[in-house]
Image (cartoon, rainbow, N blue to C red):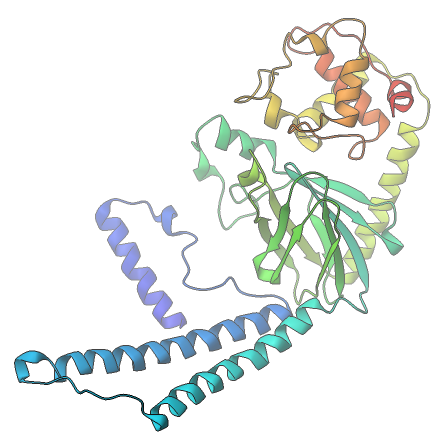
Length: 390
């Protein structure tokens, strides 16, 4: 299979050069699945190849008989159509053969399906929540309190949206920042440990899909689906939302960073410390200065919050989504409507509720940033204002 792949790749590369097509167009060319890195992935791949070759044999036999019959019994050779009705022996044969084929496929397929659905005896549980258009990861058990929002990095979003895909060449498809597959916060998991995923959604239907892990599960509002993985070797494994979920469906990547167990424990301890510090900072009751809030708010707006995706980097609005520059909601001394919209969202629209995504300090900072940027004069919002609005 690999020999055929190499020959076809060289042939296509030659054709591309002859047609003046850049080599980057073939950078991700492949004939088959991505290399699996989990036991269930290898089982699924083996099942896929077995059924593929069964289909190839069936096609050769069926089309072979058809072409031979059409050639050997054509009218120009004087063939006369036979007139017969019922053949018990033939009917038994063409009933038994498909039955045997189906059973030979059903047994390994059932085994793979049972293994795929078996989430028992997990070493770690991670809750995954889909939201327009990013993922929220929450660790349970020994990782309690560690959670993050994972979204496409802004520079790649801008390259796709603002620049019409120009400058794609600066993102190496085989490097650390492949185009449209690079996130600000990766899901870190230990190698060799069974990880159970609880998958749901805050808004519409999403689908969490990482091909090399052979993991794909729908994230449905009001439901919690389960799946699992056990990664064989360290590395970064990338995927996407596999369900059409709205405007930025194409910009909702997934990156799983698998590390050694010792490295994972170190990372988890550091993440817990950082999460505790952030929670204490948000609950400190401190009065934050405008400059402090603006600096933190800009980070949220252009990064973790992903607000720029709908409202634009300069508050100009994207497509049909509202602008913030000069908007009534972001100006004036009354900031209650602005706080309510950001914290609770607007049902029936793409404006998500950020109250369950950001803490009080982060919400106060991003709202302050929106109310004091691009010519807006809306004043300062403090964490205590957010707390009273929840």
